[in-house]
Length: 136
Image 1 (cartoon, one colour):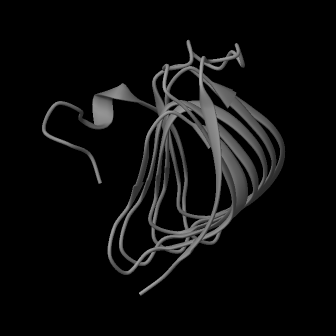
Image 2 (cartoon, one colour):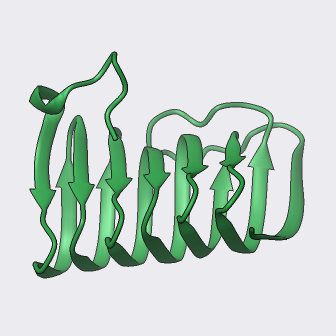
């Protein structure tokens, strides 16, 4: 799940399969969840929800990659990427949304033409709102 420009040395933490956590999560570079997490996530980094990972809560990150399941609300300052097998059942705000074939998105989407800085929610010029249901 890491690209060639990233490796596991950039990983601040990992919640493995069979693990459950509830509360508030903050991290700097990147964090991977393959277990169950319920609560809030705040980071200027990258969150990876791996296969089998389930996240339920309010997320504010720079980038998120979903191959598991995410429910709640997601604000990404740079991009939300839903890979095949990933399920995003949430209201989202992001300047860039990637939904690959075989992925599912159900919720409200607000997209700004401007990138949002970090986890801030500054208002971007010219926002559009779309309701999407995608699946394969």
